[in-house]
Length: 286
Image (cartoon, rainbow, N blue to C red; front, side, top):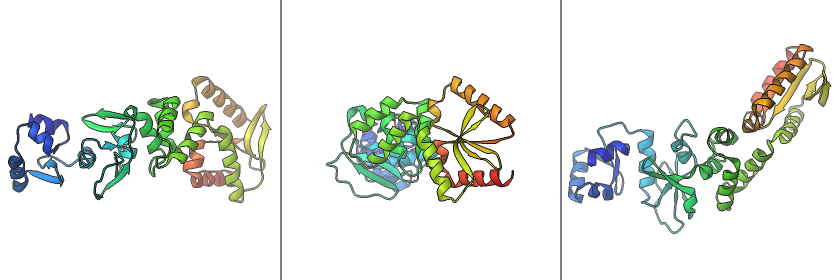
């Protein structure tokens, strides 16, 4: 039982779990004194005969705060396989009445989660996917790209809204509401306004909005160098028919001698400097 537990739980075990496997408190202490087990926090141990992986680090951080602790934010997003890399700081949500000391490498959120917002995956309590996406998207290192990716593959927008409304008032709630509203309308019109704002603030001139080219209207056109900029909304809104129409439109404009640049709402919000650098290069090269 003990070996099976350690194998399935990344080498991490609590005192209560060890006792369920038949070990006494003294037997656990002997393993710690001999160096076979490392004490991660009071009552949480790691069997030091294997690498201390990111999964072990996240699991030990959550279990350090007791059986009602829940991984949340970017830690939960990584556990759900929504993000590629585990965060350096593990976010853990504990009940509002909890009284735990701060621990390095861990950020604690105190609130009472609705049962709909908690799941268990690989033996670890984590926030359910909809709440995880809503919260992780507004954390540093998450961003609108995370939400867009999740909407393409994992979860529906209505589920995100329900999770958000169940948890109003939490850390990051206003920013999450803005992201959800942008996702709801595709954010194309907002992206166009943001592009115009970026161009003006950067001091770029010689462009017009909604400029007619070859029977189409280009979102932003630099007339002299003939550079056309097209703005897309969120990727999860794009279906195969829209994709095909956009490509036909782009080909028609290109055949008239225009250099066509395409940017998404995510480009404009996440990488504005890169967008401006690309535009400057395009208009200077023509």
